[in-house]
Length: 255
Image (cartoon, rainbow, N blue to C red; front, side):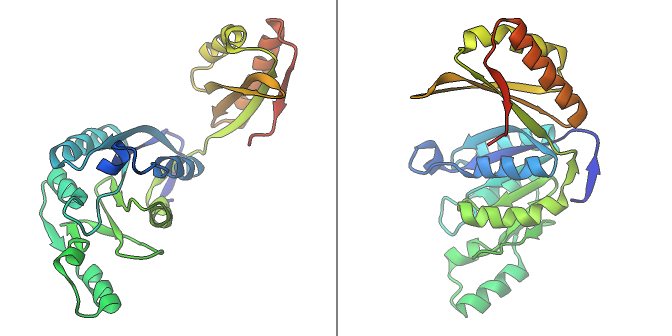
């Protein structure tokens, strides 16, 4: 990372593609980006999915890059006519596109002189942008301002993330601890959980119910950046639950 900050560092993910909205393709990139950013201390604060429509991509991108420290886009940088993410990013920043000489050189080394118009589309980068390495296959992504534009193919996107992380100003990583409540529903848990959550607004407390042959209950996940405070909140939560008459409570290792 370019530096570690005690302040909260935020990011948004903009998923681009009709195939995601139609349900033909399942989005796993947001999950992978969230996990990656969490490790380096960057909070994923918002996600949006937009179709392959230039105006909608530009509007969403401008809104997100104004609000958050970083924006990561996925999808729309391939060779087909509907791959318009580069066009949209350039429009959002008010710059032109150009064929990046390094990408052209990579393509010529791979395909020789057979650089079709479709292939050349993948060499287009906004003027002033830098490349994001692609260690898997195909052309790289690019970055301009606080925006990182990555591939939509999950394996390629994950590879590109390795070049994104070191460029971000990370914060203190979020850590979590899990309290498991068995045999009680969320209706019983809600009041003590809410009371602890209100007492600690800097912490994130979430309830995740489970049901199965062995019974039912909820995993209560407490997240924060200060491990000492986190431990104290877990103790307080367990005490609050037991004070509400809920006895089958224990801390478990997070999955």
